[in-house]
Length: 120
Length: 113
Image 1 (tube, chains in turn yellow, red):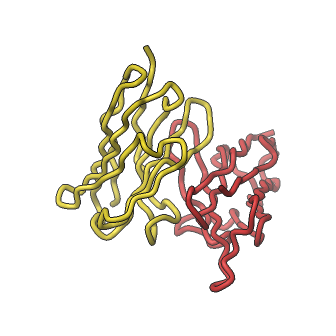
Image 2 (cartoon, helix red, strand yellow):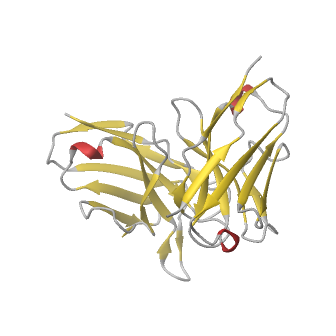
């Protein structure tokens, strides 16, 4: 059974940094691209970033480009999102998800999410 | 960027009746070389992560009840729930995966009348 478990969320001040992790199990992590999607409180879904299976290719949404960095450790079956220069508008539940095929496409399994709150 | 516009924002349907959600993309998500529409639908119930329902605009994900169907091509798409059940109360999102940045529609909340 596929399982994705996010961690690392919490309260951070504007301008601060946070690193999210997503531990994967139940599938061959190293052969699938992965992605992060976020959802602000009471709002819709926003795609954040994606990474190829090898980690050699990365993709970002315009609102996080230059501030967030996606990475992965295939030896640990773990996906990461390093978030720097955080803003109030980055407050959201962050979901990691498995990409069904290619570097980016459809997201067939999702974690339960981790809440990031950016506030002073 | 491809903008995805869903309508309506919410709808209330009686149990057993049909529910229809529409999604319009600002540019075509039909890839001519394979004649596939790069359009997916997700269901999100309260307090839960999204769940993939349909991809390639009309292919149901494994395990999804056949009362859910997707249709459309190019820029105009529809998600239909043929006979609404109580467990279908949720917010439904469309998503294009034709190009980066990947984008979602704003969501449609489906409730019981």
